[in-house]
Image 1: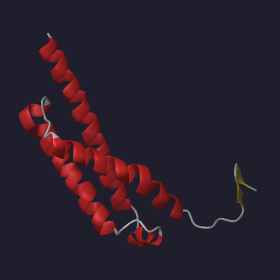
Image 2 (image 1 turned 30 degrees about the vertical axis):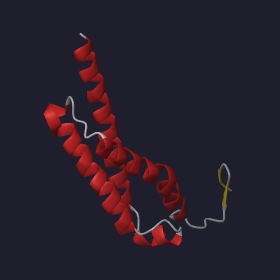
Image 3 (image 1 turned 120 degrees about the horizontal axis):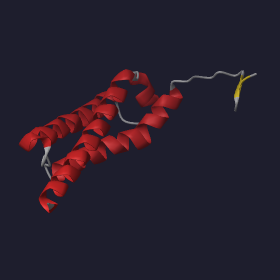
Image 4 (image 1 turned 90 degrees about the vertical axis):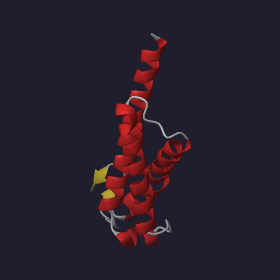
Length: 111
């Protein structure tokens, strides 16, 4: 019984990790390269390679053993950390830089 519970927990964790990695990669694709450099966050190519590699590792990790025990240990952990760093640090800076200087908007919306 514990074996099946453990498999289910690993399966849920693999789905969550893969979703996080795909989200980071898709978000990185949609931003302009100039905003990365303007905010001092390396280059878009660097972040595309990092989040893309994390996504590939996540796909391999999920598909290993039918997705039930799909862990690559340290590589899987590094992939989740790379995607998390992008989402927690780079994404907010790049997203806010793309909004521009709309001067007629207050803290609760337009004037």
